[in-house]
Image 1 (cartoon, one colour):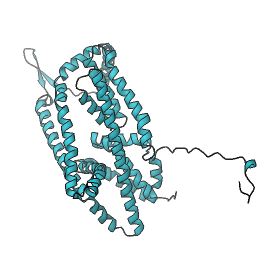
Image 2 (spheres, rainbow, N blue to C red):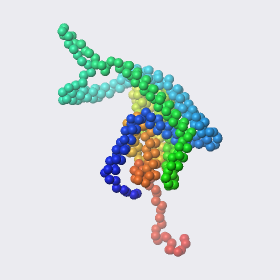
Image 3 (cartoon, helix red, strand yellow):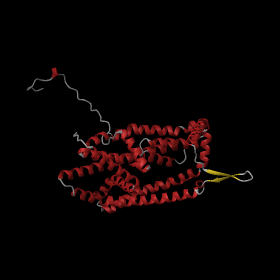
Length: 392
């Protein structure tokens, strides 16, 4: 690897440029995030699009429209199937909370100790600061009655909650429409955009490097997404079967939950275990029976995460586990749940670009996963080797 010295001014400009990019990604997420999602889904659908266009001789716009209708039609069908049981569980949330409180009564003592300790620390910090932030004010009348005047923040909470849900739904639908529109044009005219980009490269080496980067990004990321989708579908199917065998209501809902959470490394399966345990507490009469669904869920995840996925992806897709976790936390902080879904594909794209740019090659080597040690070939002792110029 070639090493080049970077002066302080260049390093500071590079750091400021990186911070400016992250600042833009954070505050322009409403328009940038749908485009990134469209790019990732485009990589996933590139192979079926090529099959429809090259084998079935469909025009690219028609093939892109058919793919979008098929994919989002299936997503809509599954969403419609699980919407009714999901709504029922949300409506039973108050009763579920009371049931969970009764089942977890043995934890009430430790929680009370933690709550009292937290209140004492808060009171101590309030006295140390010399002032507090009361949520309500009091006034005493001439007759000695105390009137409590609620703070403005205690009123209108329901209206603000309703308006926030409405605004969030409108923003989500706007971003979803932007993603669909961008995805259609990427599928229909993405090759022409890449061709124009390659044409403006100054030298033939730069043109070849751009084509190699685009090809490897499409090949590796699309294979990763397709493989992970198939594995996650199997995980969701097995969890749906185990919920059905254990008598849990709405097994399709919990299978879809396991399928979606398995896209998020580490954190997703942990959330799934917690959800299965809480549902088990609401369904089964004892805590020990409620531990059975999350225990089976954990066994399924360990089998998939430690055996199947590494065996399938080890030869074509290796990333450093530490950087995978760091990327997950960073993109989750930046873009929320969609950032967590995109963390691994974005890290893979970054590694591919680093591998093809000379100055970034050391960074690509760091991002790569642990190298597999090849088994050395056995060597014959020197005494058994034939002398020079003589055949075996």
